[in-house]
Image 1 (cartoon, rainbow, N blue to C red):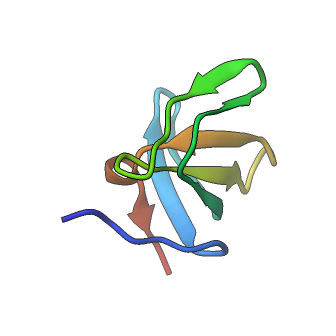
Image 2: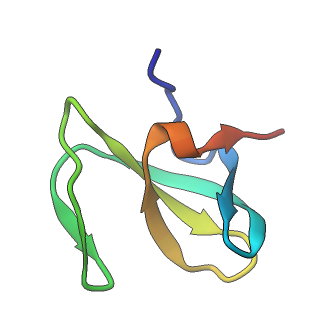
Length: 70
């Protein structure tokens, strides 16, 4: 089952440095680039653009990489 997240949802994800928290900026359903990195999102395989609470930087993550937090 695919996760459904919406803009503003608080999420956490794992990084080599540990767990990072942030918020969903938007659901990406088309190919785009973030800081020169290709995001291969499609309607059938969307990714979420998230903003780190600590650094303020944005990144794209697949739904399975994100955990909704309260």
